[in-house]
Image (cartoon, rainbow, N blue to C red; front, top):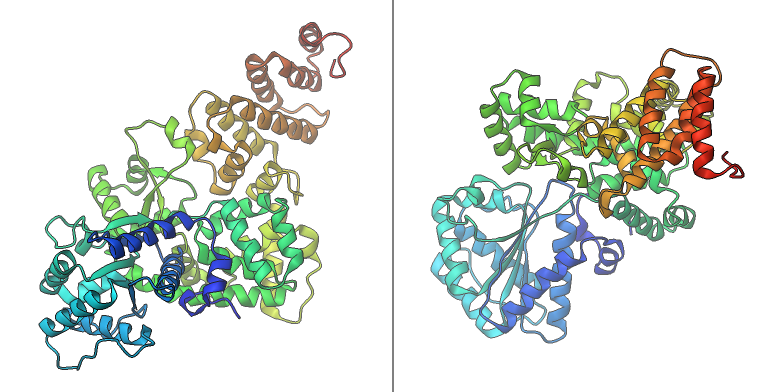
Length: 555
């Protein structure tokens, strides 16, 4: 069966289980609430919050299938799995009708409650109460709850809140892309009513696990083995910023990395991105010009930014921007940047990044004007090695345009080369030594508990550094020093033996490295020798020899 990109509910239960990674605790929490509803009068209603493509439908589809399994095992519970897009709902009465329709679709014993189109609200509520009393609580799986609440308006929301709170015939498992005002304002009926869970983006390891399962499902044993080996982690890290951590985008890239010909790949990516564009264009159109300006700037900026920095950048009063950022956060457009690095930051500042990374597609396709789309070029030049791009030969003019553009950029892209070098991947060219110096300076600052310089590096570079540091285990000066040593070795090799003005700056960096660990005098000795500061080099070498001993290989 082909994996559905937009409608996981079409997939079989087994495929959903096979492709599911990372979020089992969330599903188990929901199922525990279902079991509590069966055994007690407790009704802990769930609301999953996440942008388009974050995996909400996959989770609720699994919940629906597991509720069916409980029912087939004899547990007194019912399921009303509503269609994802409820275009026909314009009132609370319509919503009750949809729930009753869904119950009839699920029921295989012909014991489902019967209703007519003209039944009143009271009749439909009574029918649901009677069904719950006879056959157990009704688990209502409903997506895009914010749109439904908007459709039934305030009176309908009050009626629904009353039914959920006092009848206790239903247990809602709902999703939304954003906390709309119908869910977040203190004056509305559903303020703080649901137990909410925000779906966090996948990290590289979770994404690799999902890609491996998709490859296994598709029968691509070679790709599955490559992903399972861990060798793909560095390359996935290099393209992580393209996916924004969202499962749907990773699934799109999963299709891409299994394709062997560039013709098919370019066509696939264009189709996938074009499918997503109308949604984001529609969502952007709902924003005010002021909000769109902020979202567009966050899409352009390639690193987390504080409100103060963004206000200065856009020339907007800081307090006003802060209110807008919070409003955009409630609506899912911005999110607080979270990383082990943030614990070292000034806690008075909050750093934000684009909450809907895929929205960049809408901006890029809108401004492409017949030219190759940036996101596709970035993927091609990051995933493929230089020789693969050079060997592209196709009759398709569009394919060759993308291959040519990706090849041209890959040969001159300093950021890409830096990421490849930091990730220990084959580099398309040697990085300019100034870029290595910028990363070394950022790591030096990090060793001083100041991560700001690192945060301001391009996202792919920062991600590559964080991947090497594996900061999840906490701040580790030894790992910082280890990466700095590799950077110094790369810089020494690039400079060769020809003196260069920037070498003095590298001497300062090497001295800082040696100050933290005297065993790293090796790098200072080397830099001093390369710059023909022989007396200083011999002095440092003598100190190095005293530390390691005259017979040590490094001496």
